[in-house]
Amino acid sequence: MEEDKTIKKKKTVKKIYNIVLWTCIIFLLLIISGISFLFINAKIADKNNQIPTMGLYTVTNETMSPEINAYDVVLTYRQSIKDLKVNDAVTYYSLNIFDGLTILTNKVVKVNSDNTITVSGNLENDVEETIVQPNFIGKVIFVFPKIGNIQSILSSSTGWLLVLIIPIVFVIIYDIYKFGKVLSMRKRLSEIKNEHGNI
Image (cartoon, rainbow, N blue to C red; front, side, top):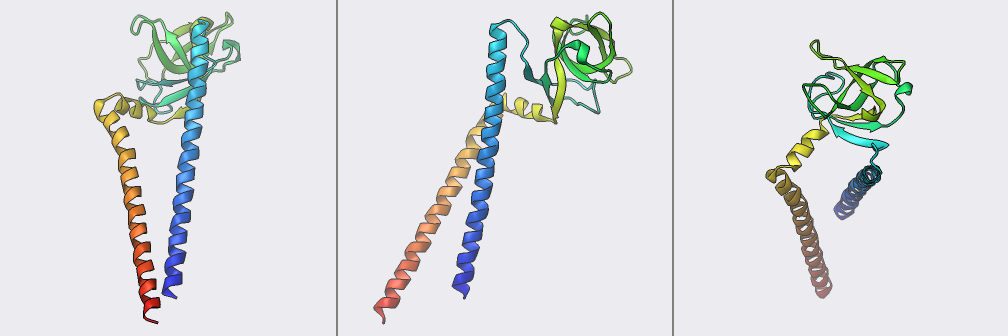
């Protein structure tokens, strides 16, 4: 009876492990596929001297807080300025005297009749800026909170070390688990042989 419970417990643990493992694998494959698509899309656009249809950009300031915060990553989709609405969050090349040619994310405060938009942040001292279509990157369609922190970590030597160490530790733990399982099976086989030898 106890042996049946142990077998059931092991099967349950194995099932949970397989579900978690495959979920992680599928999740990683989806991320890799998405990043690959965006990378290829960016390369093609760069080759043709165009702005990518879709792109990921890290926000580095708090001008759009609380909707979008520093180190959030925004996914943008390129469209015509005419299709934008007031309060849409957009990413663009800023030409103002404070930032020079810098990629910024702010909200639309006015859609102008001359195919331009006026943008500004949520802060009281934010300066309004007029953006023309060639400097418009895209409308923000999704925000990944604080993902930019991962980019900062990975860009450091400690971050890359963690990326290398964590999978290695996982592999070592898994090998120890398999080794323990083999020892347990050998012990059980030895006990069975001894039981049959005593009959």
